[in-house]
Length: 358
Image 1 (cartoon, helix red, strand yellow):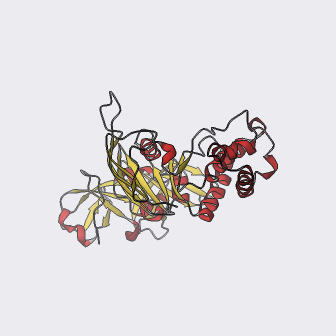
Image 2: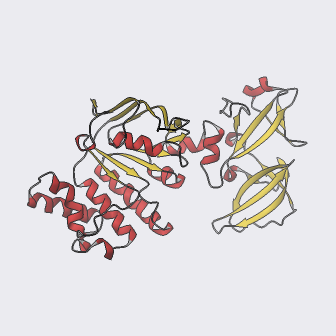
Image 3: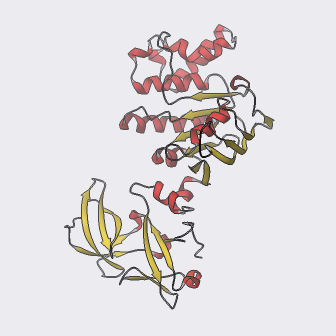
């Protein structure tokens, strides 16, 4: 296991008009599972490749276990990596694929056999050790790639979108297996993904990236519940967080959305006469039979099995609601929606940053 410190890492590719990473700093604790999450082009893979030694930063430092490895070649960094593609050798059997890294390090044959069988048992590959990759499923080939990475006793495990080539059911089962495996090994892990479900379910912490910067880093439940800005709120969640633009009344105690209004936290009274953004998750909104809250018209009704998704309209603004399974509504029907104050988040419409409302 190892502690990883990334300090002010800058990377600009030739001909680029913007930095791929813009002075990124991140402290990853010994044994922590850190997820780098963000859309394509946000810099997460570049950051991982600089940590791996596959890219050289323009400036900044990569420190592993107190040792500056910024300019060391990958093999001297005590880490292993699982790529998006399976990257297994098609002409080698599973046993030889898993043990390849050990063999090139000169590990004795008996030790190689012991470690390969240990990894094969962990990843349910024992029956396939004598097969070639072409005879394996996609999930099995990815297990081989993970097994090859963990047998070399590295301090840090790097994973670059390792589940993206698997179908939905395989991703679900492999995700659970991977979380259990990393927990058992206690190995420091840095995992890159654009899939928010993977990020929220796997990570001890999630670092959300945008345009080469980390915009928020924290425990998954905190990042989801308290998005630092509207980008994080809009990126996380399926469907994502709603954002309603409203005007704070002259008295400063309510916010108006074009005829319908809600009470405003006292801490935001100073915004009287100004606009604010109300952010709320679709699952936090309740359909209220007591006729309180906001009166909205149903535009789209989508039964999803485990829940029902409603797209409603409030004074020209869309508001999505995740209702209970079996809920029924007709387009054009008007519903009362209750927005619990404790689930509302407030944002500055100019900076798009979360405001302190307590």
